[in-house]
Length: 307
Image (tube, rainbow, N blue to C red; front, side, top):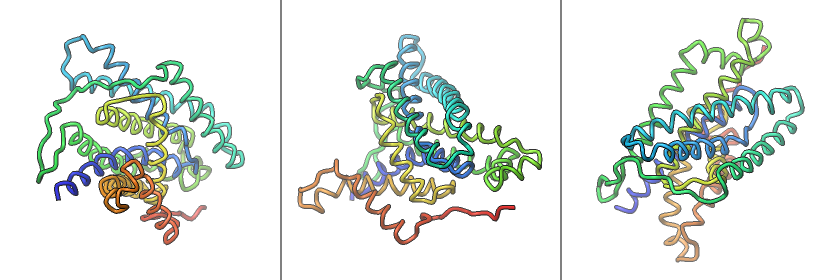
């Protein structure tokens, strides 16, 4: 039972990170039908920016929580500027091009960002310092630390804030109008380019938040760290129903739980043939099964009638 509860905790923490990144994927896709494959690299830039700021301020005498907060703000600013620039330079000129062109461009941006990060931060794995109390709390025999609790709380608050933004604010209405029909929205006073840029900035902020939490939880950063979480987050977005915010959240959490439970029990299920490093296969097997039965994902995508 202790192992089961521990894997549930691990899965919720991991799934929360996936969900934050998946929200960025699904927001961009919902507005302009583009899969931004460079989104995982934005997470990586956020984590490395945070590590850089923490390293600079290491001898300042500031408490750990202040260092983490300052580095998070810096990561959000850098990632927002980066994603804004990517949209304006790489994606906007291809908005009316065949869909394959922006898809290939997104893959190219992913490789470009990895290469630039390798040049700037070097290809070595860097240790992310422990900034918050590491003493674990015990829950029915399982343990959870301060960073993991913060990840769960921040993810819940972020989702609630994002849902409020999309459903209750003027910007949210503009986003929904642009997603439905950009041309008609522009006739109603909405500026689609501004809305799309704002969507990329919000997605970048979510990726930066996920990157800092991922680094703080796992304790290391490097230039390739965004690829696998980015791929898993995209899988989570498709799993839950890409284009649907709640679906991205549900997909991320479920994917994290499946991966954690798979890592905990795959050895026993296969008689020791497969180890915990094969846990990824469970997530993708479940994804294939879900998409076979329900191609639109668990919660599907809301498809509006175009004017």
